Structure formats: structure tokens, C-alpha cells
Image (cartoon, rainbow, N blue to C red; front, side, top):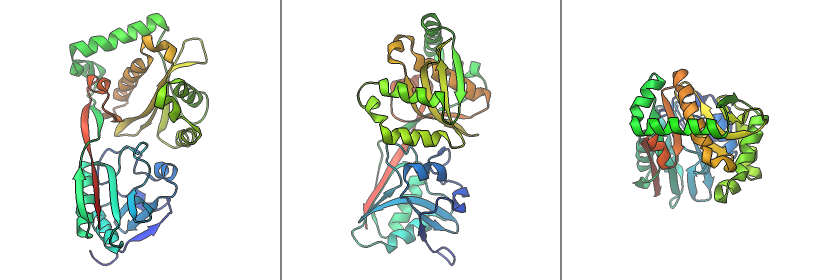
Length: 304
């Protein structure tokens, strides 16, 4: 500790502390003010002069801000994060429970150390992961990296799409409008939990996210129509392409429009010199066939 590091707790998403570097690198929008304000409007900002962490408090339970199904990465910000967490935990009543999920290893180490210093009996567990492709400098290098079988499969799917649907018309859209409407429409056509997911609350979240800087909707337009065969809802910055959600036309499943669009997006990411393509949470096999490696996420929990 030291002078000037007292913990402030407030609900102001405009704080300049969001400019502090995230403890865990390459976390996209998920520790940013814009995303957290939408994903967790009631989040409490724990802040000192050199650290920031967004939490949610519910009685004797403290957790990371936002539901784990919509927040893919969590991390504190700033070099004083461990001290901030230690001071905050030490001020909580005995019996307070803490649970922080979706923590990359760098963030898990700091959160766990801070909680221990604050008098919390901590348990660190794994389980979830994200799937990340480290992108080479050229599309040809990428095709070489994924191997002959997957390279052939990617090309075969594209040819089949062209035979069944027409040319590959890849468009990038931002904000509200036709592309967002198509993404939502196709999402609701999916069966099971995926189709049920896009209710009024999620529709409002995606509509608001679409208006923030960095978010975009990639679309495969069916040639000559105002309909999409597939959509990706993503965030892109200088460091990475973060594929947040997707949808496709079920009646065109044999044409693999989703895979064709992902391939087009990976190629475009390489062309603009993005270094990583992050599929985010989920262990679907196709991600690893496309060259992804798992990035371990940890959960830090305990009781004071």
C-alpha cells in the first residue's frame, strides 16, 4: 500500500482510469467502459490512482461485472490492481463471497494474490477457454499453417457455396441498419437455445454494441438480393479480431455459409495486419481445425 491509493467505489463509466493498461493483454472490448456500461449497467467501479476493477455486489457476494455468458474476458486495469483488490477485500465483512470467472492467467494471478492479501481463503480453478489463431503475415502462409486437409476443406466449402448460392459477396457494416437486422433475423431462425437467445434484452444489447466504435457486422450477401446467408458480429482493434457472435440461414446449411464467411474474415484480418483472430469462448472443433489454440481462463473464488 501507500498514500494516495485509497479505494474509491463509484458507478461512473466515464472515469479516466479506463485508459490504464489491462493486466491481461489482448482482451478486446470486454474490460472497456463502453462494453461494461451495456453489459452491466449496475457495475461498481473500484478505483485507485493506478488501478481499476469493475465488480457487481449482491448482498454478501461480489463478482465480476456482467454475466459470464456475455463477458468473454475479465481483467483489472493498472499496475496497482493487486493492492486495490487487497484493500477492497479487507474492507468487506467476514463471510463475503468472491467469484471472478473468465480470467486470463495474467489476471487470475493478480486477482488471487489481491484477495489473499485481503484475507480471503482463495480457490483457483480452470475449465473454460477461448480459442485464438495467431495470424501470419499472408493468406498463403495461413493456408500453409492449417495443413493440407483443412486447406482443401476450406477451399471445397467455398466452391460449394459458389455453386449453390452464387458469388461470395463479403460486406462489412457498422451501426444499425440492414446488416444488424439480418444478423438478428437469422439468429432467431436457429433452433434450440441459440434461437431463444436473441430475445428483447439481447436484441437491445447487440443494437447498442453496434453503435460503439470497433464493433462491426460482416455479412455474406446472397447475390442480387437484400438477404444475408451468414453474419458475424465482431469487435476489431489493432491487436485482434474478436468474433463475438454469428448467425446463418438454416436453409443454406449445405452451403456452409458460416464457414465461408469466417474464412473471408480471417483473410481480411490478415490483409489489415491484425495479429490474432479470437473465436472467444467455446470449444467447438471447427475453431481448432482453422488453426486456433486454446487460451486458458481461470475462476478465482473464495470467502473472507
